[in-house]
Amino acid sequence: MPSVNLANGTHLQYEVSGQGPVLLAFAPGGLKSRSELWLRREDGRPRGIIGPVEAFAERFTVLTLDQRNAGQSRARLSASDGWDAYADDHLQLLDALGIERCHLLGACIGPSFALKLIERAPQRVVSAVLQQPIGKSPDNGALRREMFQAWAEGLDSSVEQPVLAAIEHNLFGGDFVYSVSRDFVHHCQTPLLVLPGDDARHPRAVAEEIAELAPNAKLFADWQTDAGKARYIDELQHFFSAAGAPQ
Image (cartoon, rainbow, N blue to C red):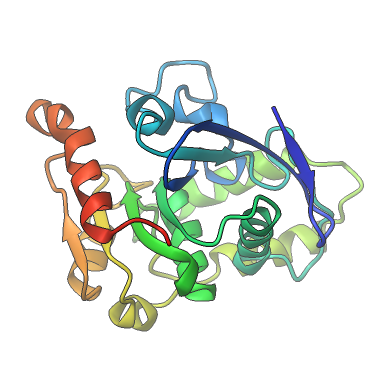
C-alpha cells in the first residue's frame, strides 16, 4: 500500500486501482474511515455494499485512503483540527499525485468530507456521490459521541483531554452534515447524487434535505432495495458520465 508524507505533516496511506478519470472514494467507518472498510465493518462482517474498486476500476482510476489517524495514516493532533484539516490532507494528496480534478464518492462520514472538499476547492471536483450521509438529528447525539470516543481511544495516550474535546467540538459541534452549512449546500453548483441512509447514524431526512437544497442534486432513493442494488453501478456510472470527465 503506497504512502505519502504531505507538507502539513500528515502521513497518508492510499491505494490506486484501475485507469481512467479519477474517482476519489472516502470510505465509511466514521473517523476510523480507511480503505478496507469499503468491504467490511470494524468487527469483520461484510459491509454488504458494492465497493468502488469492484464497481468502477474498469472505467476509473479509483483512489482510496486511510484518513488521518485511521488505519496506517498518521497526523499530529492539535486543538484547531477539524474538517479543514481533513480537506487539507485530501487536497495535498491530489497535488502529490498530480490530480487536477476528480469525481468523489463518499459513504457514511464520506459525504461530509466530500462537501468540505467541494467548499474548499470547487474547481477540483467534477461531481460527488453522497451515500448514506451522516448528520445531526434529535436521536443520534449519543451515537455520534460513542463514535468519537471509540476513535479517541485508539490514539496515543499522550493526547490531552482538552485537545480531544476541542477536536470533537470542531467536528461535531455544529448541525446538519457538520462539515458545511445549509447555505453552502443551497448555493453549491457541483452535481450531487444523494443516496439516503435509513438509520439513526445516517438520517434519511438529512439526505433528503441535501437533495432539496442543492440546485444540481438528484436523489437515488431506492438504492438499497433489490431493484436499486441491481441498478447501482449503472446509476452511478450514468451520473459520473453526465457530469463529464475531469480535464
